[in-house]
Image (tube, rainbow, N blue to C red):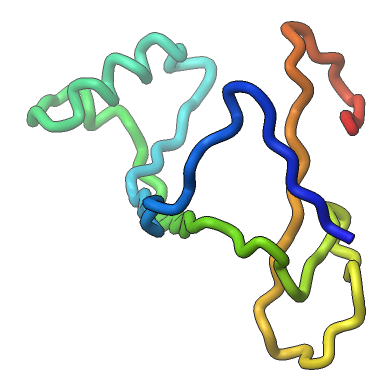
Length: 116
């Protein structure tokens, strides 16, 4: 069975939460040998102003769309983070809900490690 737990700062009232859709269309290729992270942050801050400096950035044609909405109390058609079905689906055409994992609240992470 799926269980929801919240504690401390994580507890909040979602009754007034309205679904939101975020769409990002501005992606730029960063060439590490010619553009530092600081330069990229500066260019992105100046994005709204026409500038010859922005011509150095190579745009990537892409669109990222994220739909955010509160999850139902008892979600159906669930997938684990490994994309395995929690229970068999009676209808395979229904859009599933995928469970996600949170990173642990630690300051240092070890590369090539799986956190559970």
